[in-house]
Amino acid sequence: MIQLLHRKAASLAALLLLASSLTVICGCGAGDIGPGKYQVSGVITFQGQPLPEGEIIFAPDASAGNQGPACIAYVKDGKYSTQYGKGLVGGAYKIEVEGFETKAEVDVDGETIVAPLFRTFVTTHEFPQEDSTYDLEVEVPKKKRR
Amino acid sequence: MQLMVKRNRGFTLVELLVVIAIIGVLIALLLPAVQQAREAARRIQCVNQMKQIGLALHNYHDTHKGFPPGGIVAEKVTKGLGDNWCNSGSATQGAPWTVLILPFMEEGSRHDQYDFKLPLSASFTSQVSSSSQNYPLWYEQNNKYQCPSDPASGNGVNNLNYFGVQGGGSSSNVNCSGGNSNVFFVNGIMFANSNSKFRDITDGTTKTFLVGETKYHLTESGTTSTFYLSWASSIRLGTGSTMPHPATLAGTYEPINSRIPTGGTVPASGADSRTGYSRLFGSFHPGGCNMLLADASVDFTAETINLDIYRQLGIRNDGLPIGGTE
Image (cartoon, rainbow over all chains, first blue to last red):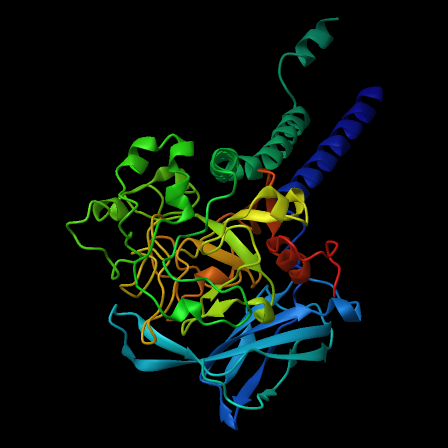
């Protein structure tokens, strides 16, 4: 009788160990992708036309009490979207937009000539805590040649 | 008594299962550690090389009473915001900080081969005359500037994994920007024609970046263009139709690791023609990059760091508390 009890206890212990080891091996499933998990995409226009090339820095607006990692979205033919896993946390954001145009010719060194279209355009926007779309129009008082 | 002896002769199934389960748990604990061991070792070597660079810069400061200039240029560097000095000048200029600190990195013989009265090559396409004694030095590999986590390191590649911090901030802090998306700052410690001393770092040496790690230096194999740089590249000034390049310097402008890499051994998919390597820092280590502070300590900075804090750490004299805004 006592032997049987011992056996039961031993098998119970073995089962527990097996279960815990399986949990450790398999982990706790696919994890979270990090703080910036909300993707944002949209259309960006400059002087009524889609912005050919550019980049947008999304930085949480500290002066509005928002904190989190900043991220970059590349603009191509007026469209942009943040990279997977490097999105927004939502809330108030400061947005810095730069636009470029790639010239057809290359310079004497064989490097593609890329000219800025305008001085960096800065704006703010309140993003929701979910994937969203945000279209913006770059407002520059006057095109500055540099 | 006889019965007991008979029973202890072998292991029961339950006992075997228990042992197997214990071994399983131990392996499960060990396996992730083993898989990261090689990268951890490379990362430690990368940090040690950075500390050597920090010591070299401090010894340079003790000898020459100031940090080396980020790069020597023949033209006058104006210190305003949105200036235009970087868009006019010769394509080859004087020595960058990476060459100037060579005697303090036990590379004195390499340093002696340079003729510092003559310009140094800037890029593969902006070379000095092939008769110049500085010409072949541009192509040589220098493993003291190669982080082992970078796939391009070794193999005779002349890449650079450590950029001097010329400053930082938002677009309104940019001193000079050229046609390309590369930027010049003058609010850091090492920038064009700088002569910073410890007393100029009024934010404190523990709160100012001096050198940062990078995976954006343009290597021959990592970019789609023929335009690439060396660890010994001089600053390249633009001429209107050509674009200026800080070459061995960068600023804390964009978040760490946010761009598509232009280093490494193969061009990353989606790499574009804009080579804004001077806008940010980054590394092949997951999650962030190592930054050398002005007190020669190395801090692994996470890529999720608040952008305002990161930008302020690049500036030597913003006069703001960490994380404070104007």
